[in-house]
Length: 306
Image 1 (cartoon, rainbow, N blue to C red):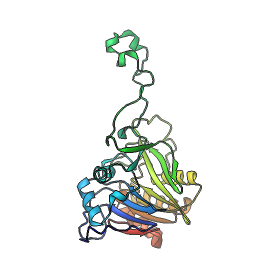
Image 2: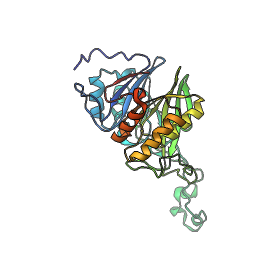
Image 3: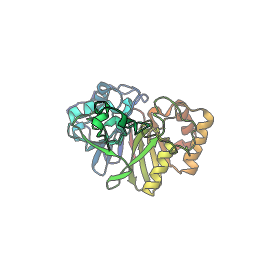
Image 4: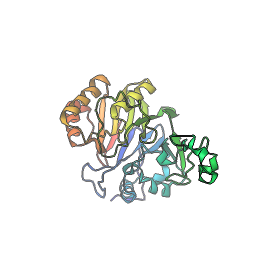
């Protein structure tokens, strides 16, 4: 292991994978299923996701000589455990760091909730002692502390530019999206046609402006990687130079993946791919076969320049 007293200087336009289940065998790094990476952009050091296990996250951060006290801000892509648990260690090292979260009930977002039920007149037939809040529940909002009590959290409800060239892209999946696939790998035309307020999954992705186009970071692409790319292009009015992170393609077969690859390359004009995490072995192979020199290996501990 390198001297931990000499922290790594993360160079501009550099990405390092801190947490993943694949990669070269590197001294002291522990592979695990989950995702986290760190990126330097315009002088800002950004942590994107925190992996599954805080102890493994801590180990890998130390093995790579990363100084988490120098993180300018962190981003939690979504509420699943394999992307957030390392934040417990982050907050121990850097307790005041700003963390951007999706506007999601799981995180403690101040979400309105109608407690009246399907028949709002039923309350009038009940004794006051049986009425929620004694009958005074109009415009009720969940008032919870959230997972990370007293942390410096900002909830992102819509796509927004937080700093020059740094944008957070907000999307939503109609499914909770743990280990399942979605009904169709094509864009879901009816995804927003039903009320998914409490059974959907909010996500935020990170988009960094570069001379060649947007560098897009995705956590697990539960909204589908195509939807995230499309939303990013619509919001930034820019092309996509590279997509880095998890594409959530493990459940899909060869036919579906070949179709997706064609759409990424020919329709969405994504120039380079750097898939990681939940993308899957078959998708790794098909994407690499089609993208060739524009396919970037981004395993655990790898340093990617953009």
